[in-house]
Every structure is written in C-alpha cells, then in structure tokens.
Amino acid sequence: MNANQATLARKQLEKRLAPLRAANVLAPPKGWVKAIREALGMTARQLAARMGTSPSRIPVIEKAEVTGATTVKTLREAAEAMNCTFVYAFVPTKPLDDILRERAAQKARSDIARLNHTMRLENQALLKSDLDDEQRRMIDLILSGSLRGLWEDE
Image (cartoon, rainbow, N blue to C red; front, side, top):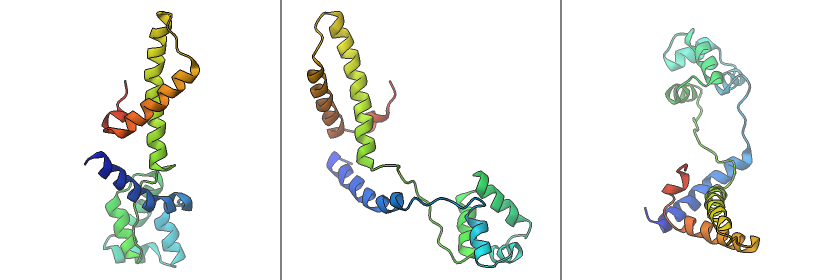
C-alpha cells in the first residue's frame, strides 16, 4: 500500500472510529453477558439452552468475560443466543493522525537530541529555533514516508 492509499485508508477508518471514541462505552461491572441476560429476564439455564451448552457453563462464561479469559467465539455465541450483535473493536484513545504525529515527534526529538549533543561537543550548537524548525521538518519527512520504521525502538 502506498503512502496516499494508507492516508486514505486511515481517514476512512478514523471516520468509523470517531463515534466509538466519543461514545466512551464502559463494560458493566459484571460483564455484558450477565447484564444483557438479566435485562432480558433470561436465566442462566435458558441462555445455556439457547447456546446449546450446559447450565453450569454460563456462570463460567460470565466470570471469564469479566476476568478477560473468554474468547471472541464464546462472546459471539452468547450474543447471538440473546438476539444481540457482538461488536469487537480497537478504539484509539485519540485520532490516528495524532498518534502518528506524536510518535514521529518522539523519534524526531530523539534524533535531534543525539545530533545536538554531537554538535555541542564540537562547539557547533544550534539555536532552539533552529532545533524546533528541524524537528518540524523531520516530523513531516517521517510522516511522508513509510510508517513501518516509526514503531521501531532504537
């Protein structure tokens, strides 16, 4: 995927993610399975029958959801058994472009700090305004190329 395609894909994804980020949905303390089951007035035995499993499995599923030890498949099956749609998403805490720009700024600051240190040792230190200009230039350069190296730790 070239840079223009990646930018377009990121913008389209961001349009889909923005409403989710704004919704700030938090899971109920006892988990979604139990909350929805109880809201529907469905017993564990009834949910088990609809899922085709044993009644003793439902409390295990509900506990596993809360502890994070469940599977996507199990949650999908429980949702379907309760006439719900299972939704699974990674929702970035801020817009994707902001995350990329912050990471590029970290990399640029690191590179500039090394460069500035070397130049100071040679008595050729740059002015803060020059360093800031160089950082902005490096950020733009990083973001205009392949993003794969952006996430490499040095």
